[in-house]
Figure 1 (spheres, rainbow, N blue to C red):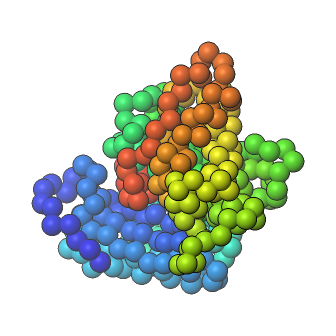
Figure 2: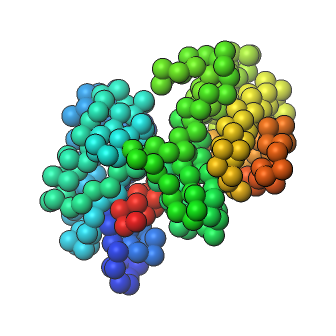
Length: 315
């Protein structure tokens, strides 16, 4: 467990959980958005549901060891989806042991009866960016997490719009290729199937790209190869950018957003992703009311999920 020595009032202190297919992170976050205590465990994503819940419990137990724990009045959870905030359940595509898992009830019990708010990870990132990041001051925005999967969330009329179940804005499972490959969600041709990190890497490998001597076959390695001019790596990122642009433009046409904020590990590729994304948007965002749509990198980084979960807990 790491503790931030920052001092100051504890008004608004909440516990936050960021649950994904790779890691389960937890933190105590104050009302200014400062992370005062943090904990993390790997996600045992291929194990049964109780084992995954055990990792969540370990994170919460470590937070509870902090002298600040008693001041935390609520718990916010941002989880890989789909989630059902109304029922308090989660069914992350990349955590097969959790299907309709009663996460809110279990966390409520594990934290001594504290109130628990659940949102999807894309909505959590959106809340963080609207509170402290690149969407701050924007009344209508789409925020995307492009990583192992692709998630998203909406700000409409100046407020984060999670929808009835906490999944509104989940751009990753918007269909952008009617004859595309099957997606893990059960659909076909989804943005996630084309633009997520594992699928960027998979496409590059299938088309002849080969890792360097270290054997790194991740999307980050493909991005490095693209920066060095490898045409197959460049093409894989251009295809991902095209899928993202199609999804962003469709969302903008539907609800009139004026900014799209892109975060997550794949966004770390920088202009390897953003340059073709902006070019592709000129092809898809053609109507007058979406033509000036801005696309920018997220600012809250790897803490977006925790900060957004905290924001959801006090909204």
